[in-house]
Length: 590
Image (tube, rainbow, N blue to C red; front, side, top):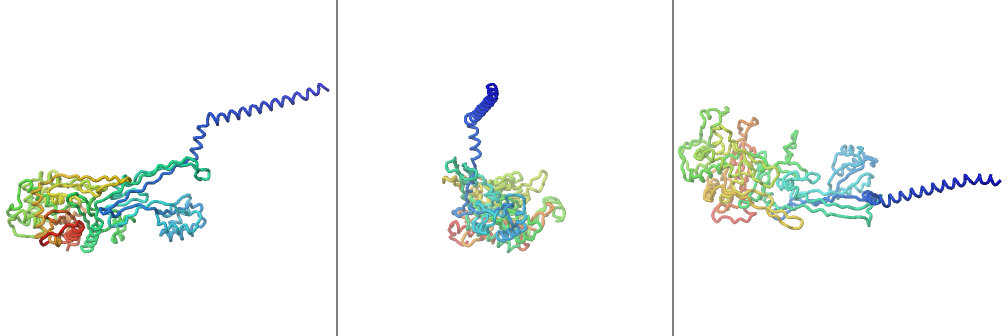
């Protein structure tokens, strides 16, 4: 019996021992794992857990504001609401598309397509008024949401749009000052870091770190908003009166080069990002809805306004004086044989005055006042092509002015090698192409007693701490003070007695020059009867303060000249500019 009992107890002890060994091994394994987790891998696992709990959010900065010279807002950022949906949660997409489409002003078929997509996030409309977003939320539709989003607004509307430009839906500068100063305006994004639990709730005692966003820089411009408005209205009226394609105006402060107004017609709406033009609405492919600014970006042959540079150069170089008489000034000049025989051939070299007249001796003053093409060419002949080109470039034509505006055109000087008549064409404003801003700056140099000053739109920039960075002036002398004063008097004579009489302003002595240039045809070789009419001038002539340049593109035949179409616009804008600047009227008659 004892032997049998011992036999039964042997395996039992063995099993107990094995179980004990397994338990010990398990405990040792658990201890080893705990040691690995709590000691060896503790730091790494803690970092992984923290990474899973931490959330980083970018904090968008407030975009800088844009002001006119009087502190009036031209552009600012406000909070709007954007409407979005999760299509998978929408139970009745057709009903939602119809209801929401009516509120948002979006085609219901477009919304239906978005609401039935396989995506989990679709915008229905971005940056709507908060009141409209509340109406959407009041529908209490599952899967329909709103969230706050900043939007750019332009309090002056279309009035200052050719200056400010605009931003895209995401707030990126696309045109004008918004584009040129985009980096400064946008500011520096901030960052928020915090811990959240599995349900997305912020852990109160968790890590929380916020780096505030730095708001963008504010721009203080030289623009005078009331003058900007009056200039735009004058252009709109001119387009209607002359049936022109467009009208453009730029106003400069003579001494500083500050742009007081820069606008045109048709006008541009920065909110809809479209040019407002009824004729364009009827076009098959309305590319004319795109933003444009002829003042800075488009070039034209300035015609007789260029004669200011030609005559100033000849006087500065001592080749002529104001009273120098040029003999035998005809109404037609043929620089190449048979050039005037036919208007249909491709032989260049025939130049004519606008009106027929008997051959006569004319002084330089008479040539300028009557805007004689033939007489001006004879003056330029004394100067020679090399010096003429030098002065054209010195006055800023053929190169950008450096204005703080996106994508400025440089203009062009066409003096091809072997061209026998290019110098003569350039003397009267052909073979040369410039922007209205370049021409305004050239005239401002004469008004500023021979000192050319680079135009600018932003007078200063102000950062978030109130520090102001004032724009410096870039100047150079182009002619002597004496020559500039002589040219001022010649310009005054043009308005008093010559082709610019429609530019007169009551109470002020005004000076300026008309320009009428035929436009090239589609072949780029032959000139058409369609013109670009312009007028550039300054006032008051005893101490010029303001330059106004006006360009009328393709006016009707009745208004084809600068004196008929552009000069009256100049008079309206100049009168407003002088009043806005508080310039005292002249003592004598205007």
